[in-house]
Amino acid sequence: MPTDLPQDLPTPKSLPDFQRIFPNEAACIDYLYARCFPNGIECPRCGGTGEPFRFSNRSGVVRCRSVGVTHA
Image (cartoon, rainbow, N blue to C red):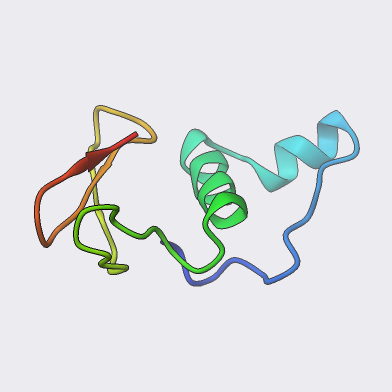
């Protein structure tokens, strides 16, 4: 997960705000992960919270590096 996101994540209030906050798809995904998993993603199988493997061709899908479980 990105470590450079601010703790109080901004909420876009207009289209220009949205375009500034989310210049690309990766920024959107990072924002959503930070919103949904503020303490990092936890693997339901092993409980690990390390940085997951991200698929370059499957946005939003990650795999636990410890046990190889895929999460969407």
